[in-house]
Length: 126
Image 1 (tube, rainbow, N blue to C red):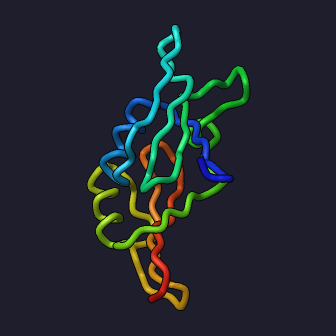
Image 2 (image 1 turned 90 degrees about the horizontal axis):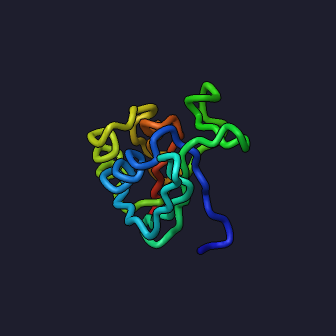
């Protein structure tokens, strides 16, 4: 684990794990299904960085962006090839938001995953 690890709440954790694998090359480390059919906790690795997630648990305040009407934050994922990862994510089911473009700080593209989370794909200026 790194010092700061994102923990996402999604409305279909099993499907989200598959999406993050296709879109970002995430590898599943652990999955903890609950007796009620929901996924209580899962850990993925994306290029060595941890990403945790679970299904919604409104009874303890864990709600997804879909339940809340949108995401309140974004995840920045640094990649070598923004265009390739952006295309792969959109092909896997993400919604294009802002296509990859160059700026003084590097190349970035924004998208929204099928579960309502916003992602900024970024590669620093060389």
